[in-house]
Amino acid sequence: MDSNLVNTTGSVPEQKKLISVKPIYIALAVILVIALLGGAVWGIIWLARTQAAAIEAVRDVLLIALALESCLFGIVLLFMLLMIIRLVNMLEFEIKPILEKTNETVGTIRGTTTFVSKNVVKPVTEARVHVAGIRRAIKTLFGNPRDNIDNAPH
Image (cartoon, rainbow, N blue to C red; front, side, top):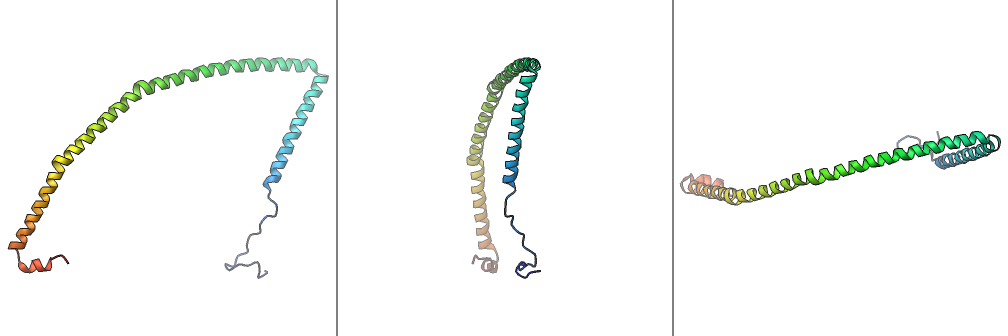
């Protein structure tokens, strides 16, 4: 093995492709599509010259199929329009009231939490602070003096 091809990890580096394969596949696909379209046009022209009656019959059948397909699409579009109308009605008359009630509930909860915070939590917190201060004062005044020196904040 050539020492120039081996890198520091001891493996052989991968060689890069000189030509990308993707444009070749795309070109082949384009050529195939053009050939198929050309063959189809040539076949239609040949059939029109040699089998005119058969082509007319096929044309008539295809026109009837196209008309039936148009009718089917019309029915499907009407069905979709009815579904959209039902969706709008549901949004307006069912979901909108639910959202309004939810907003009212959220407002009530917001008011309740504000009330509880001002009238319950804050006084309880202040009372606990005062009780802790009184406990510390009592412990400092009546406790062991050596404990006060050892527990003093540094």
